[in-house]
Image (cartoon, rainbow, N blue to C red; front, side, top):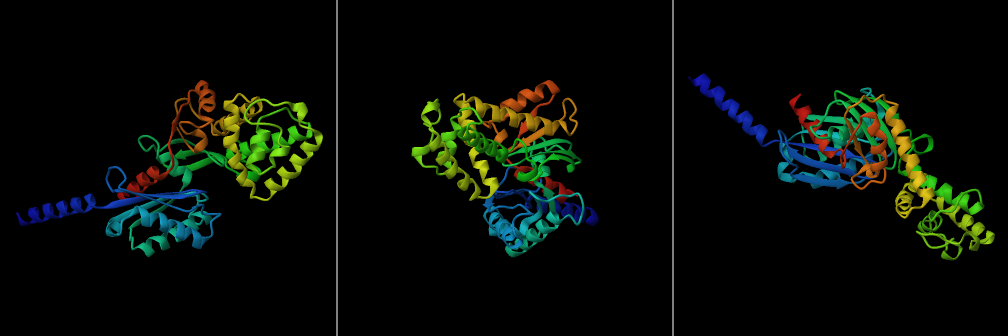
Length: 349
């Protein structure tokens, strides 16, 4: 009888401990790091925090630690830090392809220091790629299917048993990321330069891109959006436009061209043919990236990134291209909730 009572008491204590325990999921991307605190078993997030960029390859180690600690400190109240039992992070620039993969090692080291600094002694600390976390954020926290990320860059991946096994695209601004925000912004800059030197057709982007890059108003071709009188844009003003635009582009890191992507979306809304053509080409690139992974009809696709959100400029054209293939897309805001799901799985494991 006593043994039965002891076992029951032990079971109750374990259940009570689990009920009061928490996990943390991290979505560490190229522009920000988001941390989410949630109960270990189930339930909605109870705390959130945001820190600086979390790309494991491009952010220096000390900065990465600071950004992680900042997000964690806001997400996890001091009184709950001793009750965090598992942490999982989805990191841009990290991979689970090998135990000694550089991005994974760097992310784990930075996260370990950040957790220690805050007094969070989680028994399970796992590093995943941002793509794996984004895919796990899909409805039902899926384990198998395809993930598509279309923000500043663009990459697709096949996920098997919650691990990335194959990728297409995602080769960075210099070599790839076709169809992403940088690619769209670069195409906009190329289009207005071709228009200025007489090699390309007219587009309202010449004015909006010029303004965004600080080109003087008196050399712009006209008001954007809307038509303009091409004949009024003299050769001298075109040359002055180019002389201002090129240094403005070269003065910033190339990836900053991604900030021109919303201008393409706006011009396309006003029926600018050249801008609409850029978005159509971007959707074609994303479709080709997915097709490179051999999708099967009805297979789950989870997408994330600003270009594919509910109001994203590529959502409708991509959906139209995937429908004949028997494919539909679930969109998620980011990988934070997926990271929470992965942390819960890590604790159970």
